[in-house]
Image (cartoon, rainbow, N blue to C red):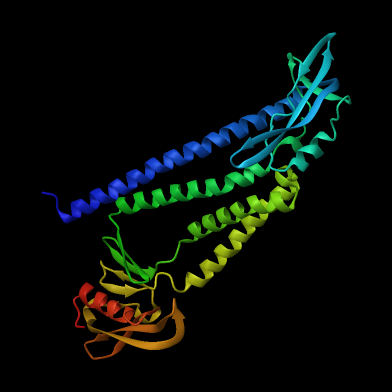
Length: 346
């Protein structure tokens, strides 16, 4: 017969397994995009160092339209002839990165340097002269794709960190649950009550990912479409990264004095982390008292209170254990938890 503890262990293991499978699936997709992009970039770098150039005549230069249910997309359609060692070749490859754009104007601007009948410079592979392209500079690399991939990487790395945290908690036999707005983290040696706010690494991943996602739309609309310069794109990435760092630091400072509100050392039988409670033995406490004070604030149209939890020792002296904010019923929940957890009078 399966006990309640075994059932929870099985459920936790199943949850970790599902998270791991989804993470493999997600990173597989994102990794596939990374592989293709990296492969093309390395090919571009190789071409820049090894390709030779020859005069080429443009015999076709036009905007190619691709219609779909999402609207029209535009691309470069060029064809040119060049001669290598007396043999004539024809190619229609513009660059290694022939991306479609929703802006026809951007494509027309790109083609303006390659009008019909113009003689331009073609870059060809000396080992395979039929392989050639017109654009071989780093400007042909669509750096905005990096900005596009950042939110997906943030989500994937966030899942990876969360999986590691869950595996570590499972190995340490930690049991987490919540009391209203507070998170209770329990292990074999201690119990910690802390704010159930997001950890700093998750705040950074969320802010960096969301800011980058918004930039995907802002940059093309305001700064040159999907052919925005590297300076603009990398500036946007640095801006998003800096914004995420600042918000993470602000969140960390705000919760620094509130996180780990109280820690109970189960081995030593003492309350720690709160200065006025350090060294207080749990066996010295006889009952719990909670005092509620109006905080003059509301959350979702509900009045909030300041809840102060005291432990009474055998001489009737009040010892501060915890300060927290919450609705009217939060104070009674805290009192019940302390009383039940440490077998004290309510």
